[in-house]
Length: 216
Image 1 (cartoon, helix red, strand yellow):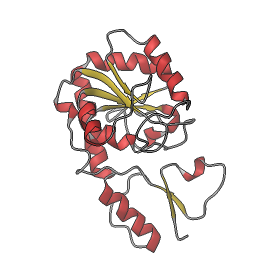
Image 2 (tube, helix red, strand yellow):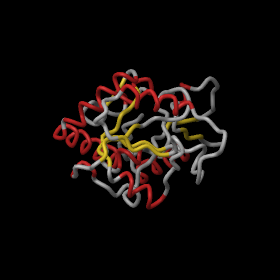
Image 3 (spheres, helix red, strand yellow):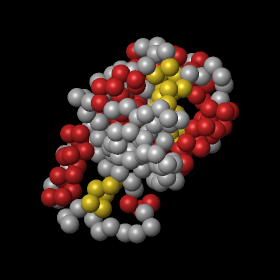
């Protein structure tokens, strides 16, 4: 293999891969088409998961630790917060146009991936949240504050901290819109599919890098 590209920092793995490099999950203007920061959606926090990568429906008998996290979040959070959760409590996952429709109704999104937090790791959920202009909540333990500032995303250190910050930005529409807009601008400019694919070509063929790859 000439190169291996990971959506996790290679130094976070407990084994080494020769010539391995981190890449962010790429965004694309043909997929990330919403600007939720320009609206006042009727729902507060969006999150969707499934029991596998792009599985159509929930699998009977399969459990996911994130269900425990979400149940606790719902229990401790202010009752005025309007959650919109999918792939959870017998509510089926959403895909395609249905996904775009439901995400358009939320102000904020939770970037919660399967398993323990790893440096820089995320599913493509992160591109969908930032790219559609939702205020995006990130776990501090992912070290994604290396890639985003507090002017572009909200970082939480615990489930209680997350709950408090969801309520804060539910109430503060002005600040929520500013940070959401900054987050989308950052993601679409620096982590888009053209930039990421060019980086992969440059590393694979040892080309001189002409673009600014801000994640390296």
